[in-house]
Length: 323
Image (cartoon, rainbow, N blue to C red; front, top):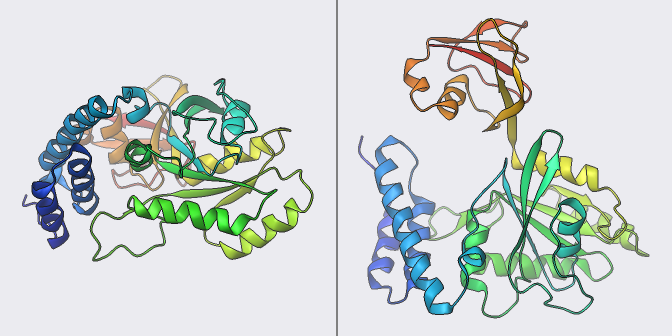
């Protein structure tokens, strides 16, 4: 199958050839990945670019004396969420409130110097939360770029005790500088821009006038998922977890062997809208080609319905694969 690469890919490839530093090469390679169509014909090229990014990432780490953990964070759990914000917005306090992580928390700005990672439990799954240094901090743009592009969701934390609109404008502007824009932003014809799922988190809802500021923010950004919390007092944190799960746009699917009870302990995590065929491939790469049919409990017209490979699954479905 031909790759059918767009003109923007070759523009980014030219930038890659002209790049002199590892950081510039990584930026160009990320731009190439961002505009590359995703199909079987580009699988090999996709892997090759990823290997080059890993190579130059290691080179950049050595050059900048930054630890591997702070430059690239391996995804774990059902999804990776990066907390983004300005100094003293409460990102670290939120991480500590919803995970077992123990980040340094203080009232002075730029307390967080390197990323902190924790696992947040939501019902029967774990979601990885990454607290990052303030997006305006000096010297961290290179590896923040890598973390933000790798994350499944960017959670923008704002301080409702301060002027809110300017905080969001600053964060969105800084993200755009490293090539990341909200899902509804046009990127056609641009090189290096990547749309990313975003969630607005209004922290410190307990403060005076915070509720009014929050209502104004929701009106200004009606298309962006949002949730207000108080990380310090634990307000609305369970709703926060649910909102993160919904914004990740993932579903949990459970497997069942013929004649046996379903395994409800470890769900298969899929993107919303996934089919039986995609679920089979996620369970084992060979199943996609060997699968004859599946039986579904949940989203079928009735429990135990035999469905085709193109049947779209829903959160909580139980599937029995027949190969």
